[in-house]
Image (cartoon, rainbow over all chains, first blue to last red; front, side, top):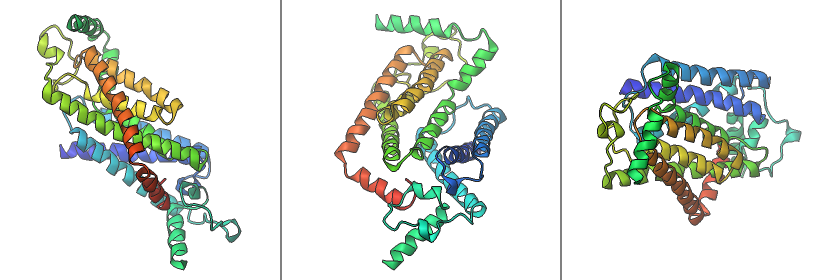
Length: 135
Length: 196
């Protein structure tokens, strides 16, 4: 059962990474994208999702009693949050030069996902805490 | 009368099983406990990050709340129904007559937990985003049909599950409205962490 849980977690993790590349390409969230060109983002998404599903449903017979509903839900939440962390970390390394210039900064702008169009996740978090530190 | 209609429709659908191996394999995949539900959950996950502007995205995120809470309510209602009404599975009622393409679930047949969760997802999203909600109805119907095809549910288990799912997401919407401004605060907190 533990092996099944790990495999299910990996299915969610990999396919959620694919979904994140899809939304990054679709909504221009450069800060969590691995690629400059949106075409590559869509291609990565298709390959990650199709690959994860093909692997999970062909490696073993899945028409067997498995996890309880609560376990499935908890593993999905853990997998999706991990995929966001993995995506944010990889894109932070790839897009480390992506940042707001001083002219573009608007101190009144509300925080949120829109910032990820112009900076990486960790740059956004760092900026937020710097701003709070200044009071 | 209802039971007889249920049995008749069940055998109309289940008699299609075991004839074309590729269709059997497809239906086994669609009726699987994970395939459709994970696909639907991925669409819900994508919706959280989607929107042309913050207002549009917030509407989508509220729909995601509604779908998740609705799915939780649906599972709870199914568990309560199971505690009071233990309907045997079709393969237990008609041994030797049912073409069973799946393992033998041990929980009660009515209502279908998988279908209830799928309909809770679809209707929860529909309440906030009609286009994606209609799109999600397709896999919800597909998993429902597949569960009858593979011989683990009666059509009325599915009908009951659809009603449970829809009622659960309406209940979730009501709860979100009652607890306002808590959902707004949580969304704002997540926005401060750049997660919403």
